Image 1 (cartoon, helix red, strand yellow):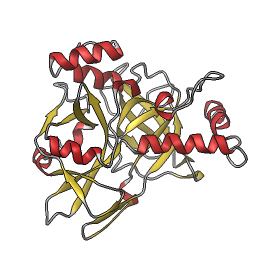
Image 2: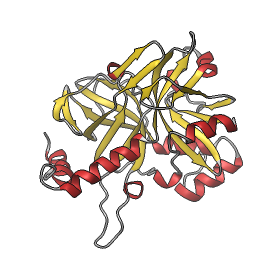
Image 3: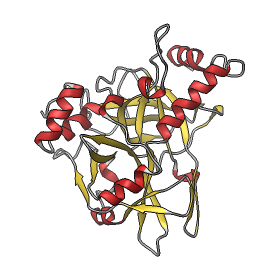
Length: 288
């Protein structure tokens, strides 16, 4: 364990067993993140769900989006016609995502997909069970060293008939100072982020443990949860947890790769003038 990660863990979990407030805050942050982190399913055969990745719910100016990875659909764009979101992490009912509009960067190296849910009934049903974040929950600076990766690895799914059970995992890790030698090129400065992903890591609620393969977690958010309130400042998880990237690839035992939220913001800004203005106002990012 490196010095940076040790400091991070001591800051957050050094007294987990004895400090109830710290434990409650960790659980609150995880709960807040999971409420907007969805398994992305494809329903093709008799309503049976097939998990393909993970996404994060976002709303801007009354419009509703799922932020995820482009490569989930690159080999079969027709899957977008069959997407669904589970109503719970343990259940047999799902919300079909109708009238979906997909936007991706022209540069195929930027592995981002922005899925706009335009059907009001789909939006209403998703809102009944999940939470849409806003641009207030975003940090485009990608300056955080210690981060959380939260999502649903493929091995953590159990599917029997129509019933799906998805067990989330929260990995605490740190940014790598250099690009891994095994990283696929091209690597874009400021857009590609790399984090340590060894065969073991600190898993929230489990301590140091073997890490899962990340198939199934592509498209999930990378989170900076390092900010702390000032004395007397009201603590709420939504004020101190920020999305900084989208996980898009990994090499188990080496690294997890993400596209920074700067790439997402630029992609959103290119969709239309309304989103361009909203992104500029909240993040300062323009459609370059």
